[in-house]
Image 1 (cartoon, helix red, strand yellow):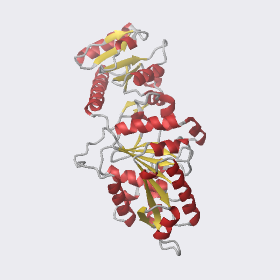
Image 2 (cartoon, one colour):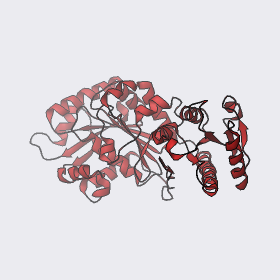
Image 3 (tube, one colour):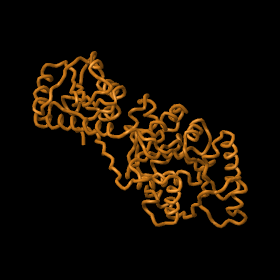
Image 4 (spheres, helix red, strand yellow):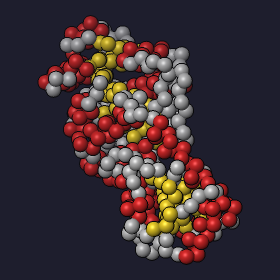
Length: 390
């Protein structure tokens, strides 16, 4: 049973909500905002009706409840729709919004929907044990070798097989993962680091795509990258592993603290290289560094855009980098550029192309999911807008 709690400050509001709650066979437990947290228990299912007040900041209090009590949902209560700041409500993690100026039947329906939404979301959390997702990090020594293309298409190929796939964009200054999926993130890893210190609400900061794929996007401004530390990356990977079947990490084209943390926490490392001597030279340097870090056993080499290049056969490439090439992807610039411009992964827009087939094979070689035919559809999240919840 879900406990229904609200803050008592206005007798008229109290009477109205009591009458509405009675119509849906519920009883509200009233308290003050100072004593609210004494009424909440970490293991108890609760819905807090949080009225607008001059005694506290409704968004700050909502965020505090959401961060400290995972099993508690918050529905904001305003008199009029014009009082709602939708952006702040989203950032605070509100489940729903109720407007007292609405008709009694509308308020009743909104309350009933909030109760049902709370029940659905919390039940879904309880039904799902923590996962132990596989972490695959894609790295390279320079930009332009196709690292991000491989990252987004690898994640997309797993999206056809698994319930949940996360892609973490660790190219924190100039990450393009969201652009490759043609989505515009409202919240990024920067917002998550600033607002969710215990990591329990990371789902609220993910940008959903389709087929169970979600993106923890890079910051929207390059200077925000300085806020994210190695400890933040470690915490993000740990949380994503617990909530997703596969975590694909797209790194920056250089080694920094955050990239090293990602490599250390990975189950598999894909190093992308190209058939030109400067790239191969730098790839060899990166391989030597990973050997020093005792990470070489996780590494699988990917030769992207393989073509006939005089003097640079696969054997020559392997000799230069000192590693066997595990996967090769053919050069098909036209379909790849088209898929990027359209914002659709190649494995979706051109699934019969040679590149797509090779990526599917690579995905299955790295991790072949078992028993995913009965994949559950992710529950769609409702979005707050100025007129309420949709």
